[in-house]
Length: 161
Image: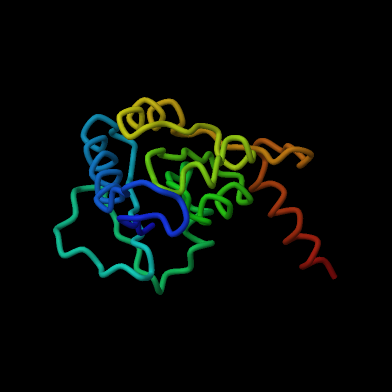
């Protein structure tokens, strides 16, 4: 997301560099997390960064379907973006990075959107502990494993004479 220098209604000074710092902190984790791939999706109002990508780092263009992308990942890191809400609805583990001018306006853990809310220096531990985990929406049916068999059953039912 874009981080303003000033909040429109609350006093305080923003940290416009915070989104880039979050992305840099995630990039720094790649060498130690051999199974991790990082997808960075700039806010639609931001220019696409002109920098080379690291191995296992991907940039998601704004034309790419966000929902397909969310379903393809395990973990979503946001500050206060509505992408966190969409990720939660997709059953993804959401980590909120605190320190945005909007953090107090969007307490994602209290709202049940994020599993963790951490300052920037807590991001490495949060990511390491969250990789490979999923979230379940309260009241949602829990079905672990067997997806391929269920899909095959549906296909066979559709193909049956």
